[in-house]
Length: 245
Image: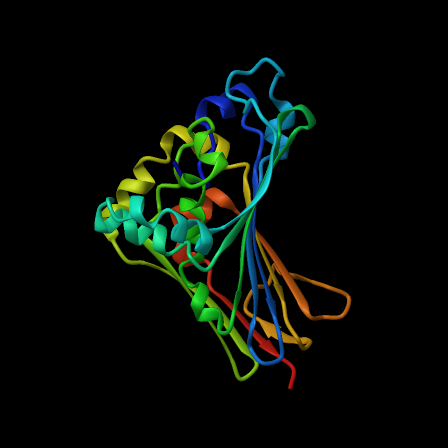
C-alpha cells in the first residue's frame, strides 16, 4: 500500500470531497533546513458515515522513525527483492507522524526530515508514497496508489540566494501507464490540491510563479496547484525563487 493512495470507492461515497497535500520546506542561512510533506484527508473523513466499513477501527497517533524501524526489521527486509529493499531504503532519512481518528474526522499524515543540503530530499515525494507500507497504517484499508511513483523525479537546488524546484519524467512508458490508470479516480483528484510552501531566511526578490502569494515579511512563498494537473504533467511545475542579497 502507498500513503498517497485515497480509496476510490470512498471518494464516490463522499461525492469526491477534496484532499489536500502540502510540500513545505524551511531554509536556514547556511542552506540547511527541514522538509515536511503532508496529507490532510480530514474533510473526506468527516463526510464519511460513522458506519462506513472503510474507516479505521482504531485511533492512531504515533510517529515512526524509519531509520530505527528499518534497523529493527533488517532481517525481514533482507528477504525482500532488491527493488523492495531500495524502496524501503529511501525512507531511512524520514520520520512519519500519523494521526487518524474516525470519530473526530481526522486523517493526517506528515513525513519530515532535516537536511544539510536540499538535494538530499530530491526523492521525498516518491518516498512519501511508500511510507504507509510500514507501521500501524499499513494495516488499514487499501488506498489507491499515486500512479506516478517511480516514473518521475523531483530535483531541488538552493545556492547563491537562488532556489529551484524542477520535475522530470524519467520513465516515459511507466508514466503513461500511470496517467492511464488515473481515469477511475479523476473526478476525485480534480478537486484535490497540492500546495508548495517555502520559507526562506531572506526576503524574496523575484519568482517565476505569477500566482504565488507571500507572507507579510516577504520570506515565505505559497503556491497552490490542482493535484490532478501535477500528476498528469509534473514537468509543468517549475519553481524558481531569487532572494534579496
